[in-house]
View (cartoon, rainbow, N blue to C red):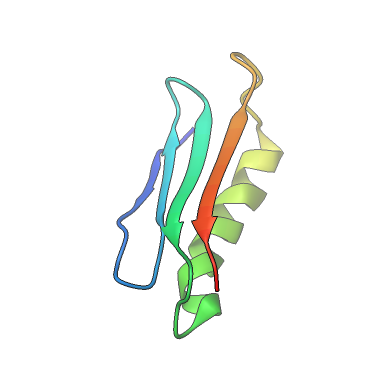
Length: 68
């Protein structure tokens, strides 16, 4: 599976997928000006992942989001 790495900004979280560990992390503040612009690449990645999911090791999803 293709790695995913979107760096954090002042108002956006870091979004990281490590194929070696099969871990998707979304960490940081999530107050983007345009939600679609930030999360559309992630939604596209999830659609692609669902076609050929990686099952070993089991996928872990870690959310550590600050949202006010």
